[in-house]
Length: 104
Ligand SMILES: [Zn+2]
Image (cartoon, rainbow, N blue to C red; front, side, top):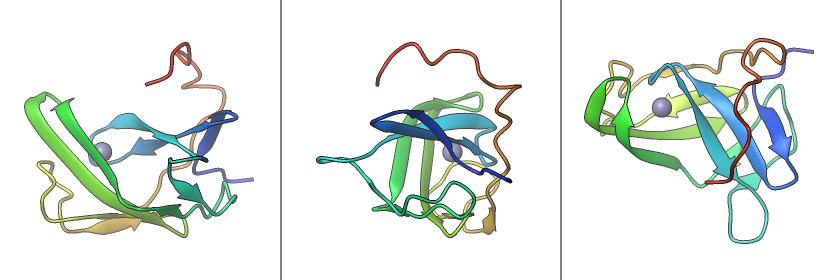
């Protein structure tokens, strides 16, 4: 199975962001994001906005929609993929399983 999103625990998902070359964590359920339940073609609502140190930029901003396994970067992103839509990379369950200690 080509998972593009990783289930961290009962309330958190994460995905590899090709714009930031980093992972983004999303909280689901309750007042968190809505997830369609698919790991290979995930859709998250509403948009995901990450601000702060990203990809070497201390004032980074990454704003995206994850829809059907693709990530649509809005034009206000500070990285090179702003305004583009690309496939979410597959998450490597073995490789990047490292630091899931805390919640955000
Ligand atoms: Zn990002």
